[in-house]
Image 1 (cartoon, rainbow, N blue to C red):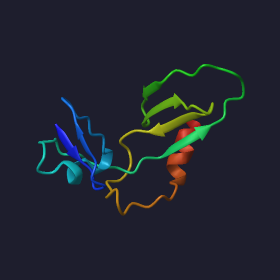
Image 2 (image 1 turned 30 degrees about the vertical axis):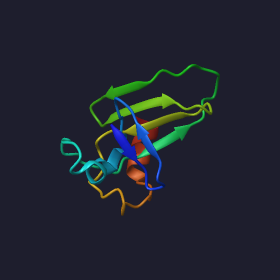
Image 3 (image 1 turned 30 degrees about the horizontal axis):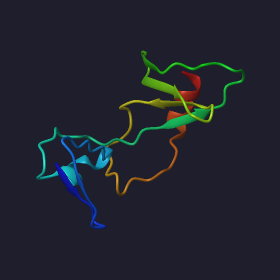
Image 4 (image 1 turned 135 degrees about the vertical axis):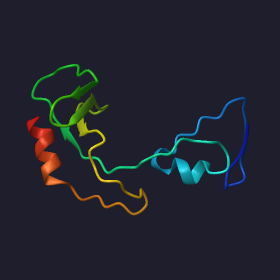
Length: 108
């Protein structure tokens, strides 16, 4: 694999891992076949634990909405909904908080 950057650098390797996330289709179009990706706007929240605890990564598939969570490097716990938000374009999405989703994350 040969990768040429816009800045003129050239990298060669046996394997190349590309992780463009929501921009996979425009970045990789015509280079490799990828499955159709649906980009959704998801709500996340960060919580500060009230006591020292080693938090596991978790996924909850409850009756309400699927939630996931994980510890962050700075000691917070990130909790978010999964696959519940509206379909968006990653370049034009807004960053407004959804009060209903925020409530669900705090209560569920």
